[in-house]
Structure formats: structure tokens, C-alpha cells
Image 1 (cartoon, rainbow, N blue to C red):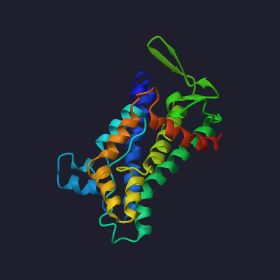
Image 2 (cartoon, rainbow, N blue to C red):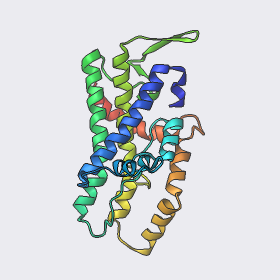
Image 3 (spheres, rainbow, N blue to C red):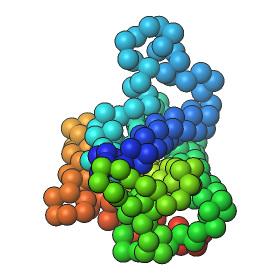
Length: 239
């Protein structure tokens, strides 16, 4: 998101889209888990200072979103998954990523229908380049930025790509992401898997790996490059 600071509209849209994405993911997983009242509402009712944010917001996921574009939310609480049917565990963990991908694709389809612009991505991830058919969405004149398309269309494009990126990122098989939780929830309970789970989840090695991948150490972050290879074909279907 920091790359968009010089484009006020883009920055605001990405921040709002990230917050909405966190809420949608948490809501979908709460409904899939059969929880009638969200944990953030219970914590807020008990007046715990900022405690209501914990079930939705992961501070490290917010850092990754700031430096690398997409981020992640707080790990879903599935309780004792050993006693739960595997289908229940799978549905609860995948509900959030599926919901994010769904609203992302819907937003991109809305952008295409509204603007009449085909979604082609020239040489890289669309949420960083903000371009279509090789032409920029904005021109810079001194300290001012003039968008070449409707502000609403810009918002739909950026929000859609942000949500789609969050959905795909969430299914990566690495804690604290939903895909990592799913991997170790369904994996054999052998000592090797337990040691790997302890290192990646309890000792936060998984979070450290994700943050390193989000850093622009060699130019474009590796995490963004990976996501672009997954998102580009999906967006191409809407072209």
C-alpha cells in the first residue's frame, strides 16, 4: 500500500478494501463455523481494550499489506479440530478465501461492465501497475495526479485485485494463513509434522517467511510475483 501514497485515491481505496476484506473473511468463516455471535462483538461487549480487533486483524498481516500489497487476517479459531469432521474443518477454513476471491472477481467483472475496458495485465501484477492495454490509468503533472478513467472504476479495479490477491494468498500452505491451518489440521499426527507445526506456527517461522517474501529485497517482492502468476490467468478470463 505504501507505493500508493503518492496517489491519494489509490491509497484510500486499498486501505478500505483491505479492511473490508478482513471483515468479509472473518464473517464467512464465522458463519461456516456456525457461530451466532462474532468473537469481536463478545469482546467489545466485555469492554476489552482493542480486544475486539484480535479475531479479525493480524498485525503482521497488516505490515505485509503495507510493504507488499496483499496481507492476511487473524488465524481462524476452529477449536479442537481433531474432534471435528474433516469436511467441517475444510469448509470453515476455506470459507474466508472463497468469499474474498468471490467478491474480488465480482468487483473486476463490475469494472469491466462499467468501463468497457478489457482486463489485460502487461508484464506484471495489475494492483501495482494500474494499467490496461499498456496505457496508464493516471498521468502525473507536478504534485497532482489526474486519473484517466472514472474514480469509481479505479476503485472497483483496485479493490477487486486486492480482494482476489488476499483470497489466493490465504490458501497458501503456510501458517498463519488459512491454507497452513488446513494443511496441519488434516495432516498425519506424526512427530515430524508436529515439529514442523510447532516451528512454523507456535514459533512464528511461517510469519517470518511471509514477511521476508513481502519485502522488495530484489526489486519486486517475491510474494507479489507469486500472486501475479496466480491472478493473471483468473483476470484474463474476464478480458
